[in-house]
Amino acid sequence: MFELTGKVALVTGGSRGIGRAIALAMAERGAHVVAAARGNNADGTVEAIRAAGGSATAVTADVNDAASVEAMLATALAVNGRLDILVNNAGVARDQLMLRMKRADWDDVLATNLTAAFTIVQAVLKPMIRQRGGRIISIGSVVGQMGNAGQANYAASKAGLVGFSKAIAREVASRQITVNVVAPGLIATDMTQALTDKAQGDWSAQIPLGRIGTPEDVAAAVCFLASDEASYITGQVLAVNGGMYT
Image 1 (cartoon, rainbow, N blue to C red):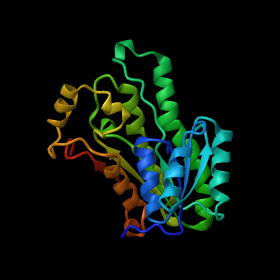
Image 2: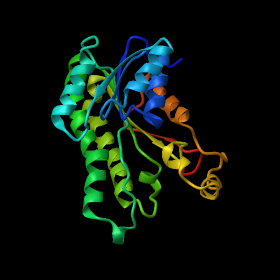
Image 3: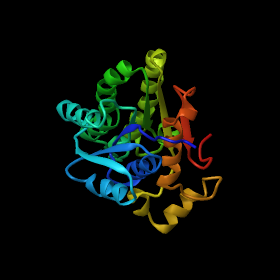
């Protein structure tokens, strides 16, 4: 189920956390994964995929630089001349209360989390339209749906991804390209591990399923949307939040 054999998948922010889990899960299902990250940070992900018998390529990319995005796409297309799946996962957070938030913190988060998605999607749509098919999946956040104090910039960027994806979904549906968002809740990543035990307990108390999610929970949802089984799903937001927000 949710087989991706023979597909080429480009995963941005593929060096750690959710992006790494997505890359590993897609490779396990048979996709050739192009893991993109700054510097050589995606090398570890690719090594893990190959050690497990999968196929992957690491690429250095800055999602805020158009030339870097084009080079990243060229690397993906060099695999077998097509790109089947894009996962927009790269993102940053610069949390601060609104009255203290600097304009630079706003600009940086919107540029990386939203404007970069525009640049990447615009680039990948050209080959996907030519091949008459593709999957575009962006990683949103429960914060983009419910808001959170101290994250006005992050919430705005993730909410923007939803509107952006819904609009593009309507534009390219006739070419059999689906565009969806996966919106994780509180997930066990480097950021949540930095929280105190009390803070983690307070967050868990707000989650009906009673636990913090894992990167693998998110990866499973992404693999579903990337698969043939999800071919009739587009313009949707799939929440992976344990019931934290419904």
